[in-house]
Length: 254
Image 1 (cartoon, rainbow, N blue to C red):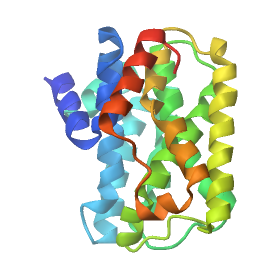
Image 2: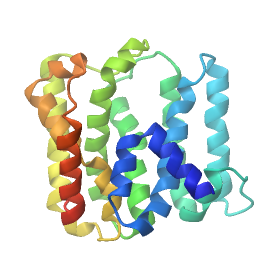
Image 3: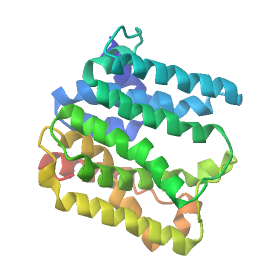
């Protein structure tokens, strides 16, 4: 029942990752759904209330749950935490704690301190998530997956810019078109570098990287048309996107 609950949370809260997981092997789903359901719950925790203290408490609840998993002791019963504890190692639980801690930025309206802060945010919330997901399935180079995950996180972030700005956030360190273009090109370079080293990611771990199936296409559009970021027009047609997912799933070439 907990596995089914996790799948439902992902389907409702992150439909694109849901499609990517469903496109992979059946046995990988029981590992990936709890991890991504955890991410869905943590990502929305800062947004379900306008009271910062309550949002802080929600995030702390997840940090406490991860600490229970990391300590390899008694873990609270919960529709996500229970199956999550079955797929994570103590180290992976500690790695995900960085993700939760970084999500505190989402609670407040302060801009990123600088480019390094922005890099660290994507590193924790996107790259660390993908590393944990991949290594929970099989052998995978953290260095290779980190670059790929950062690029995927950037693509998702650029698509979220209009919504974040509407919520009163300052999502970009430098929102000038030329700065956005350079940032997108950096993301593309990281994704391509990771793909050039695909041998460092085992076949068992590859389904986790399917979750970045649209990233390069989105970043290419951002690089060519940086104003599309603020206009919210980075997304491609669903039919074309799903076709791309089918090809990647069939070939294993994330």
